[in-house]
Image 1 (cartoon, rainbow, N blue to C red):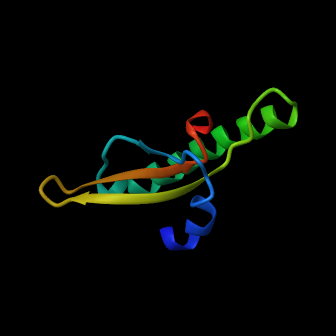
Image 2: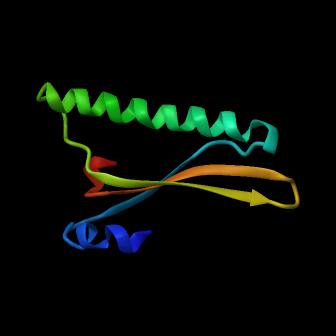
Length: 91
């Protein structure tokens, strides 16, 4: 997937990588966890977009990717976002 975004990312002077995660959950709760997690990130983006439109904030520029790891020992899932922003100020 990084190859898809590489032409844009290579032009960024100081790309900044971060990971946002939530507490691990079981299979039964995974769908709800992911739904709430996506809603949360969408709220953050909407808040910053509004601030930018009003001239009171930075424009968010970045790439996000949802990933979910499975722990076979505990039978739990760990959904998380990997985010690459244009610079640390955007994180």
